[in-house]
Picture 1 (cartoon, rainbow, N blue to C red):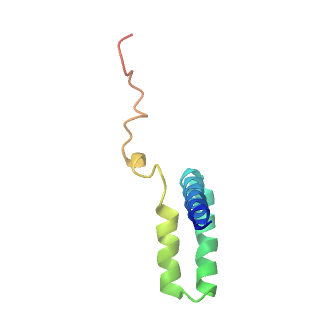
Picture 2: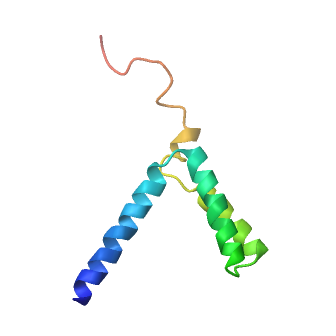
Length: 80
C-alpha cells in the first residue's frame, strides 16, 4: 500500500514539473507570483517569497537555448 502512495507522489511530482517546464513564460511568471503571495501569507516572509518568485519565474526547460541564437540563423543545415 505504501508503495502505491510513493509511486503516486513521484508520478504527480513529475507531472507538475513537466507542466511547469512546458508552460509559456508569461503564465509561469504569473503562477510564480501567485505562489509567492501564497508563501508570504503562509509565513515564509517577504525576502523568502521574493527569492521563491525569482527562482520560479526563471526556471524553464528552454531558458538556456534562448541565449544561443544558433537555431534561428536562417542558414541551411545541409546540401541542397
